[in-house]
Length: 253
Image (cartoon, rainbow, N blue to C red; front, side, top):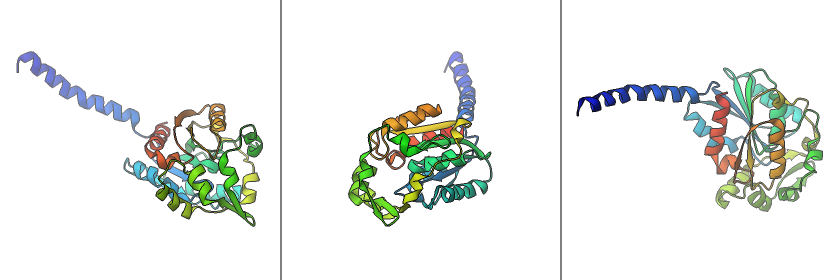
């Protein structure tokens, strides 16, 4: 090795750790806690794949068991989870629970909001009226009610909710879906947390539960950092790496 090569090698060995340090500093999460909320036709375990990936990066994760009874009770469950976190929180919601993120996200501990194929109404806005501006998604026809409690039929769950998952995996998720109270879907939010917090949105382009164009509209209206995923309504399960990366962006704010 000649003198010039030796000097270059020494310089590179010194520079590389510095570059790596800068890169890690840029991507290191400022917030270390994530609270997840699930939507209709699911339970808290739907976030398991994303949670596992975040835990590997040292992120503290809590998945709320949404009671699916009323917006008030669902919001209170999320507030309790936020209150016990050891520091600032990124609040993440899927599907219906975007209502909860929108309402509860005004909590001063919440630093950023992440919506995954989720409802994102304005304060006091009637989401059902907003949704009527777009074609009705196929999953709506698959909701079966038993008195005041609804859930998806197995056929609708497999084809219109979890359409890009292997059938055997989708059937397990179908078995753990929680029924929701009919009146839950008629309630409106009081707050619009996305008006004052950094916001991120994952659109599912193959969604048959919420119209993808409605998702795009809500994301654009919020001014959210938006990604599009070629996925069913369950991108958090079929594409957990992409959802994890979006949450990591929110943690770095």
